[in-house]
Length: 122
Image 1 (cartoon, rainbow, N blue to C red):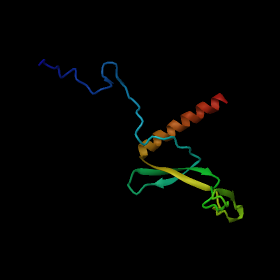
Image 2 (image 1 turned 45 degrees about the horizontal axis):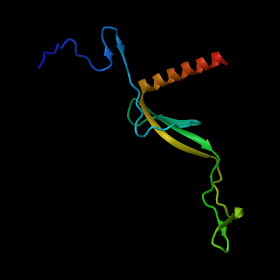
Image 3 (image 1 turned 180 degrees about the horizontal axis):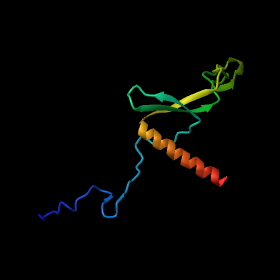
Image 4 (image 1 turned 30 degrees about the horizontal axis):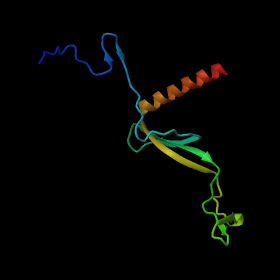
């Protein structure tokens, strides 16, 4: 067994001499792309946190459809006047984000920077 110089041990990804930290981005098992058309939220019950529910917006899909049945047992045409639909545009809430005020400020600043960059290029 060899001796380990404890002064040289550091956490993975940390370069103390160069004053740098490296991060790997790894997708979780639940990773997915979420299209966002809007947000809803406010202060969370826990002091110092904000919650943001993000949603996408779409036309409604039918809740129920009725089709005729042909004599041979195959599915026939839809009887459109029997279709049951929502009477509203759908806002499907994708995910609720809960973050500290500090994280919310970082997100705000990041978004402002991206918006500024976009506006400079258009």
